Image (cartoon, rainbow, N blue to C red; front, side, top):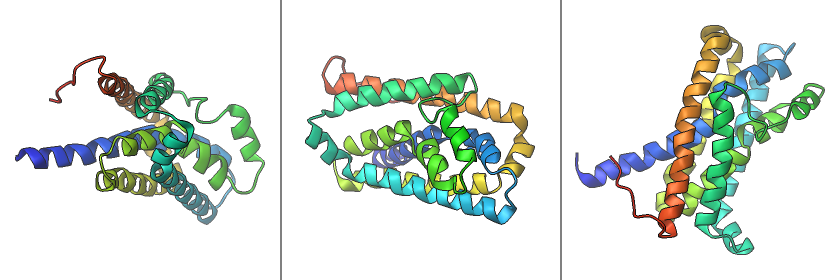
Length: 219
């Protein structure tokens, strides 16, 4: 495979995996079922659609204005990579224990949401799908892109992942029945392992940018 094609595919794959793993629609399935208990199938699909739309809008906005926020607040990209990596690591550690991270939403937020009519936007869309971890992930990925053309894979990954979120949540009852509680825990732990590696890659990338360590060659 030509080197430029390999780099192109790696760039797209990295963006898609990073965005999908941090959003993790499968881990949100039990909470979605709890908050939409008693809803008919059409109403549940409507909530799933609103959650997916909220996710793609929020993440696209932050991905687009991320660089300008850096400049406005005087934040360097390495500093944000370290902060984003730490946040991802905290989420990943909870996922490795098959539990929903409190950096996404607190039990109090879930409890309050159950009493509202529209849970698609809050808390499903934000902060459960488009939470601090996913926001920082897309901002870092776009922030380190040399040009807007290189940021396209991140934006496409956001759209693709949000579409998957809709499909998973709209059929949440079938997904839970198919995977079962044990299956969801296994998937969550596997994604937590991948997310841990991504978090440490953020750290490595930040240290390389600061010239603390030499660039690490990819396999």
